[in-house]
Structures are given as structure tokens and as C-alpha cells.
View 1: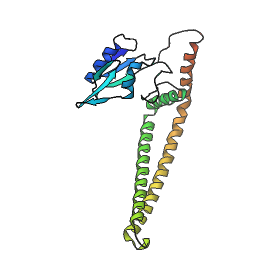
View 2: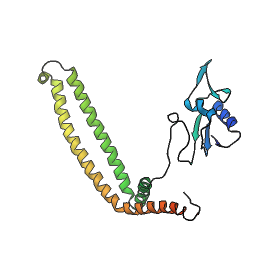
View 3: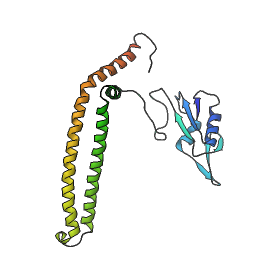
View 4: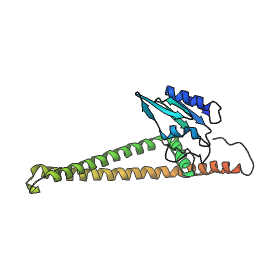
Length: 217
């Protein structure tokens, strides 16, 4: 993996080398769109003699499919044509920071709560998936069944089995939902601490507008 600054005078050369070799390139402090990169960002890859090529500026170079490009910017609005790259926003929000701090706090004071909630969520997803699969299978049987439905022993048994299993699963899912709610209530006892900590973080950031001091993230 190579790392380069957006202002690097040798950026074109590093980009070409990484594209040919299949290495990943991280461009830091990216703030404005560079036209010579448009064919690459759009994925304008041409094929000739079983090889891939892409145009960078005025050069047509061989393209290695292992190549990956990452653009990192501290700017809230990075000037890049929409729809041609995947954007990942790492901006911290009050709600997101509160949830993160709550998770850290619970892992210290009540680590079992997080584990129990994760396990219950997985069990709930499995139960809902099984219930959906049974309903789909029943619909398939109804579609292929001919004549009187009551004379179809396979379908009648499937109906009885589905109803019995469905009732059992619904009761289980209801119990899981109640257990998850109890865990969330226990978590809420600590959320005020996480919320205050989050507010304090953003308050410190705003103090910079009154009197400058270095902030650390």
C-alpha cells in the first residue's frame, strides 16, 4: 500500500505505478477533483489482447484488477462527481458518539448486557428467517396442489406442522422481544452519562471559535 498527499508533485507517477502493480493507493488531504483521474474513477477500463488498460492524463497504461484507490479528505464537501465513487462519512454526530460511549461504558460496568443483547438479536433473526422459510414453502405447496386441498395429505400435514411451529416461534420471538426490552431499560440507566460526555466533547470543539486552542480527536 502506498500513501501520497494530494499536493504531491509526483502523484501521477505514484498512481501509475500502483495501477500497474495492483497495489492500493491512499491519497490524503484530497480536496478537489482532478480531471486526469476521471477515467479511473468512472471505471473506463478497455480490454486488448487479454489485458486491461486505463487512460491517466495522456497516458494509456496497463490496469491491474487488484488496484484500489482511497481518497481521504477532512473537508465536509469534497468536490467529486457524484455516483462514481463510494463515499464513507466518518463525521462524528452527537447521537453516534453517545451510542459509542454508551457501548464503551457498558463494556466496563456491565459487559454481560452487550453479549446478551447480541445473542438475543441473533436468535430473533434466526427465528424470523425460519418462520419466513416455512411460509414460503407452504405457499409453494399451495401453488402446485391440484384438486381439493383437503384431499392432499402432504399439504394438510404441512399446514398443521406450519401452524404448530409458527405458534411456537411466535411465542419464542415475543419472549426474546421482552428480554431485549429489559436489557435496553438497563442500558438506559447509563445513557445520561454517555449523553453528557458527548455534549461535553462538542462543547469543547465549539470553544475553539471563542479562543483558539488545539483540539485532539
